[in-house]
Length: 150
Image (tube, rainbow, N blue to C red; front, side, top):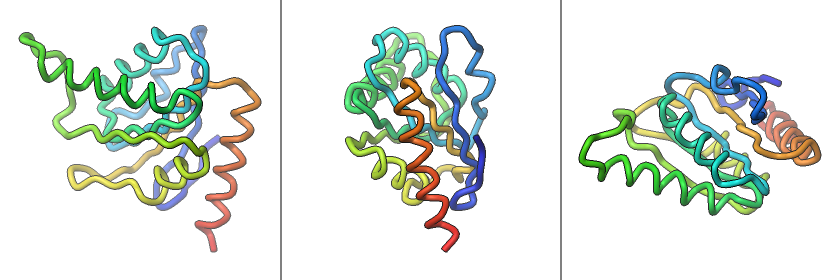
């Protein structure tokens, strides 16, 4: 699923331990809506490591584990800054937010999130959720798409 909302390419990437999902991520100028529900921490840590390696600029966490995912991103960034032997961080500041409500989080990511350090050209909804919640995310997206065309 792809589309344009607020002059940004928006696409959905679904997490799977069986597929190479990281190849579907952009390499710069992007925002990640990280949707996490009931996932083991090791999977969330893997995603965080890979999105940082792909120069994510903004991470908006939503879902049942939104606060945890947000905190884990911030922890990883802090850890990388504090390391004696520096590990990779992009040249820009990675901004993080978390939202309890799906619709509010998606609205914020698509229409309000911005950076002075780079232009957000793509928004990837990274779904670490089951199929039922995927329908919920798609419904929120359709609502935003319709509103942005008015």
